[in-house]
Image 1 (cartoon, rainbow, N blue to C red):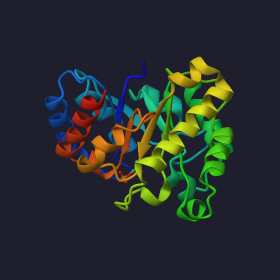
Image 2: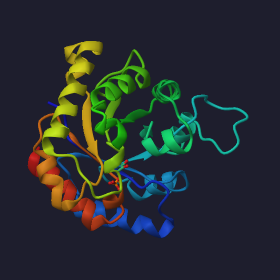
Image 3: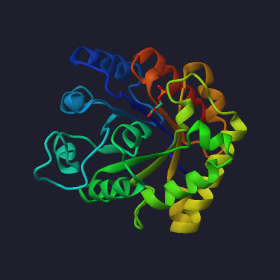
Length: 250
Ligand code: 13P
């Protein structure tokens, strides 16, 4: 019942020439059986929207400000992303939480702003290595869910990405049992807070060192509805292999 989603997060990577990878990706997937999303840097949002305009590929921002306009030099509002043609925004990525001291409260305010502007959100949560080693993973996840999510959301407008910080860009991947434990826990928390119908309809992505070589195994885990892919989303060939693995799992 939940359509699978392959999402790419380009982070602070990509100049105009990188759009050739999106052209190649679109050509390789003219009618994908899963949803496709890429979050380029803000400078490429509108040009990627044009590149992908005839294709089933949505474009996301990587962050937005909690307010819709005002004196916030360097920031971008949800309305601006929407105006540029984005359909989604990633919020609460661990790199934003760390580099910009983003708290759960800020993430929740940004989420509300994004939903109000008509954007869909991909909200990221995940534990650090110290937290996992201290056996605190599920407490951390529960706290981030409670604090980062607004009281009203739907499966249509919200995706949750579980990204253990220690797996991001490191080549280290949790065991399938560890991924399964956290995704099952997140699902139960969502059902308890939003009711079974909404809780079951929210898609859960896994993120952190997803590659063509490990994608099929990860996608076989119950309650993994797709992936949020960093490095491997920059090359059409790699992202395409991950998309195919997801299509085969769907
Ligand atoms: P990597 O796939 O490069 O580990 O990045 C994951 C990530 O942070 C996606 O948001």
